[in-house]
Amino acid sequence: MNNVMIINGYRAVIQYDPEIEMFRGEFTGLNGGADFYADSVSALRQEGETSLRIFLETCREKGIEPTKTYSGKFQVRVPESVHKQAADAAKARGVSLNQLIATALEHELSA
Image 1 (cartoon, rainbow, N blue to C red):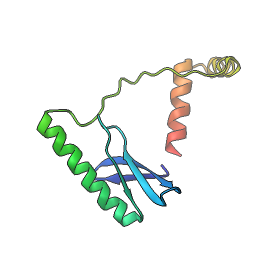
Image 2 (cartoon, rainbow, N blue to C red; image 1 turned 90 degrees about the vertical axis):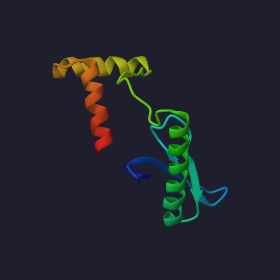
Image 3 (cartoon, rainbow, N blue to C red; image 1 turned 60 degrees about the vertical axis):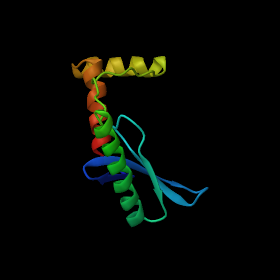
Image 4 (cartoon, rainbow, N blue to C red; image 1 turned 30 degrees about the vertical axis):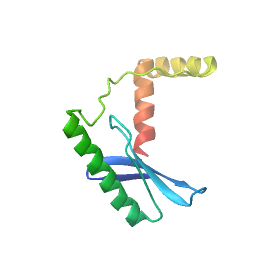
Protein backbone atom coordinates (compact mmCIF):
# COMPACT_ATOMS: atom_id res chain seq x y z
CA MET A 1 0.00 0.00 0.00
CA ASN A 2 1.44 3.37 -0.98
CA ASN A 3 1.95 6.10 1.58
CA VAL A 4 1.81 3.71 4.54
CA MET A 5 4.53 3.39 7.13
CA ILE A 6 4.55 0.54 9.66
CA ILE A 7 5.80 1.70 13.06
CA ASN A 8 6.06 -0.90 15.82
CA GLY A 9 3.39 -2.98 14.11
CA TYR A 10 0.92 -0.10 13.67
CA ARG A 11 0.01 1.42 10.29
CA ALA A 12 0.30 5.13 9.65
CA VAL A 13 -0.83 6.92 6.50
CA ILE A 14 1.77 9.41 5.31
CA GLN A 15 1.05 12.56 3.30
CA TYR A 16 3.13 15.53 2.28
CA ASP A 17 1.78 18.94 3.28
CA PRO A 18 3.19 21.51 0.83
CA GLU A 19 1.95 24.45 2.93
CA ILE A 20 4.26 23.61 5.81
CA GLU A 21 6.74 21.61 3.70
CA MET A 22 6.59 18.62 6.01
CA PHE A 23 5.39 15.05 5.99
CA ARG A 24 2.39 14.25 8.18
CA GLY A 25 1.72 10.79 9.53
CA GLU A 26 -1.53 9.62 11.09
CA PHE A 27 -1.99 6.22 12.68
CA THR A 28 -5.03 4.29 11.52
CA GLY A 29 -7.12 1.85 13.51
CA LEU A 30 -6.57 3.56 16.85
CA ASN A 31 -9.28 4.66 19.28
CA GLY A 32 -7.97 8.21 19.18
CA GLY A 33 -5.77 10.58 17.25
CA ALA A 34 -2.06 10.02 17.07
CA ASP A 35 -0.43 12.10 14.36
CA PHE A 36 3.10 13.34 13.82
CA TYR A 37 5.11 15.64 11.55
CA ALA A 38 8.69 15.78 10.25
CA ASP A 39 10.71 17.03 7.30
CA SER A 40 12.44 13.74 6.46
CA VAL A 41 11.54 10.07 6.40
CA SER A 42 13.95 9.15 9.20
CA ALA A 43 12.68 11.99 11.41
CA LEU A 44 9.10 11.00 10.55
CA ARG A 45 9.72 7.44 11.80
CA GLN A 46 11.26 8.80 15.02
CA GLU A 47 8.37 11.23 15.60
CA GLY A 48 5.90 8.42 14.83
CA GLU A 49 7.50 6.16 17.43
CA THR A 50 7.28 8.95 20.02
CA SER A 51 3.66 9.78 19.18
CA LEU A 52 2.66 6.11 19.31
CA ARG A 53 4.48 5.51 22.62
CA ILE A 54 2.72 8.48 24.25
CA PHE A 55 -0.67 7.38 22.85
CA LEU A 56 -0.24 3.79 24.10
CA GLU A 57 0.98 4.97 27.53
CA THR A 58 -2.06 7.24 27.87
CA CYS A 59 -4.38 4.36 26.92
CA ARG A 60 -2.74 2.12 29.54
CA GLU A 61 -3.05 4.79 32.23
CA LYS A 62 -6.74 5.35 31.46
CA GLY A 63 -7.59 1.68 30.92
CA ILE A 64 -8.62 2.28 27.30
CA GLU A 65 -8.25 -0.31 24.53
CA PRO A 66 -5.92 1.46 22.05
CA THR A 67 -7.21 -0.16 18.85
CA LYS A 68 -10.60 0.07 17.18
CA THR A 69 -12.66 -2.99 16.47
CA TYR A 70 -14.46 -3.42 13.17
CA SER A 71 -17.75 -5.24 12.64
CA GLY A 72 -17.09 -6.15 9.02
CA LYS A 73 -20.21 -4.23 7.97
CA PHE A 74 -20.46 -0.83 6.33
CA GLN A 75 -22.86 0.91 4.00
CA VAL A 76 -21.79 2.17 0.59
CA ARG A 77 -23.76 4.62 -1.53
CA VAL A 78 -23.30 4.45 -5.28
CA PRO A 79 -25.26 5.81 -8.23
CA GLU A 80 -28.30 3.73 -9.18
CA SER A 81 -26.67 2.74 -12.49
CA VAL A 82 -23.58 1.39 -10.70
CA HIS A 83 -25.78 -0.56 -8.27
CA LYS A 84 -27.64 -2.13 -11.20
CA GLN A 85 -24.43 -3.03 -13.04
CA ALA A 86 -22.95 -4.54 -9.88
CA ALA A 87 -26.10 -6.58 -9.21
CA ASP A 88 -26.08 -7.84 -12.82
CA ALA A 89 -22.36 -8.70 -12.63
CA ALA A 90 -22.87 -10.61 -9.37
CA LYS A 91 -25.79 -12.57 -10.81
CA ALA A 92 -23.77 -13.39 -13.95
CA ARG A 93 -20.93 -14.73 -11.78
CA GLY A 94 -23.30 -16.69 -9.55
CA VAL A 95 -22.30 -14.81 -6.39
CA SER A 96 -24.04 -12.41 -4.06
CA LEU A 97 -23.62 -8.67 -4.46
CA ASN A 98 -21.88 -8.71 -1.08
CA GLN A 99 -19.34 -11.28 -2.32
CA LEU A 100 -18.72 -9.34 -5.54
CA ILE A 101 -17.97 -6.16 -3.56
CA ALA A 102 -15.81 -8.00 -1.01
CA THR A 103 -13.77 -9.57 -3.84
CA ALA A 104 -13.39 -6.20 -5.58
CA LEU A 105 -12.19 -4.60 -2.33
CA GLU A 106 -9.74 -7.43 -1.65
CA HIS A 107 -8.38 -7.04 -5.19
CA GLU A 108 -8.01 -3.27 -4.84
CA LEU A 109 -6.33 -3.49 -1.45
CA SER A 110 -3.83 -6.14 -2.55
CA ALA A 111 -2.55 -3.98 -5.42
